[in-house]
Amino acid sequence: MNESEHTKIDAASELTEEQREHIRTIENLPIFPYSRAEILLAYRGQKPVTEFSLLLRKWPRNEIPPEVNEEQQRIVHTVIDSLNLIGLPIQCAKIWRTPEEYSGAEYFEKATYMTSKDPEALERAKDLWTNRSAKTRQEQRMVEVKLGRLFGYPDTATAPLGLPRVEREAAMYQHEELPEDIRNSEAERFHFFRFSRQHVREEFAVVQQWADEIRRLCPRLYQEIVGRGR
Image (tube, rainbow, N blue to C red):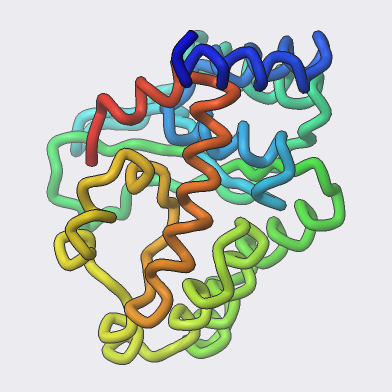
């Protein structure tokens, strides 16, 4: 028996049938793979809160926005109902659309949702997200720090978010600048935050833990993400 087979058996043996069913529900949600991965981590308690977006409608530039169609309504209701059934309450944090100055061929409208096993953390995250645009620039930066912590990002990765733009960019890696072993690893596909220059190894250890959890519990989703690349 190879190592991956041992891993699958170990993962299955520690879960109840109900938990396995919940994980299958998450795996089959009609949303992007990265969103499913983050929801799985929230379900397992490795991320206090997670956020994701759902498309509501899209339309050609300079045309009147259409009504939300039945298929998009079905997807939204499926996701909300599914998460509520497995103990992940969901809140709509914001509905937003393409700004008027956008020059692309299509406009779109999306809803940003948040979910968590912790109702208090979910409420805090929603309030921060909803009200951040009404604050000063420095207050907005500190909101980003607080949201990052609620999303389970390491403190060393969220601290630079509170800095002015030039200082923040100097303190954080761009993807192409990452150490080669991290940049080329499978686990790097599962980082949902930017790495800091001073603590990249410790932060990557958190990402590796997330990747291992997803591979252990949901190998199909893991392979779907790894196969997409960045």
